[in-house]
Length: 140
Image 1 (tube, rainbow, N blue to C red):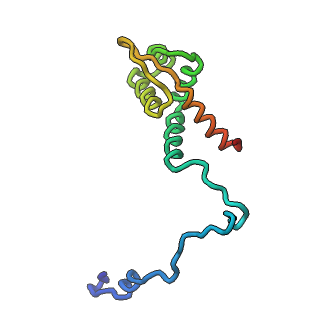
Image 2: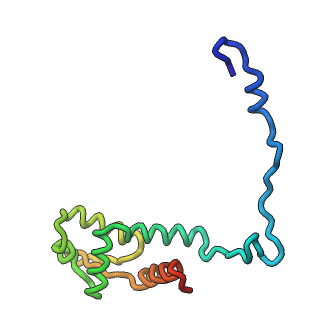
């Protein structure tokens, strides 16, 4: 390292080359899984499960997509994209984008029929969201 005067700053180099005085080791579990304040809670979901659910919740975390899901769930069966588009003051490409996000998140299925596409909610995906929200609310 060069100082403003053009000389080598050996003190700075020595600090950068120093080894830590204290080594931090991973926390060892105490007997019986007890932490400092009682039993340590385990993680409910694996990281992959948490990432997948976060992506699903992120897809739902948009007002238009939430309303689309409500329409599809309320109407139960297959709903034509033209019926979804008619509910919003948005362009067709914007609605298609939101439906694509919901489809990629696994929340809805799409079935093309001629020039139209019919959408249905995936009950198992919505049940999974319900289970996660119940767990976060203090349920099982």
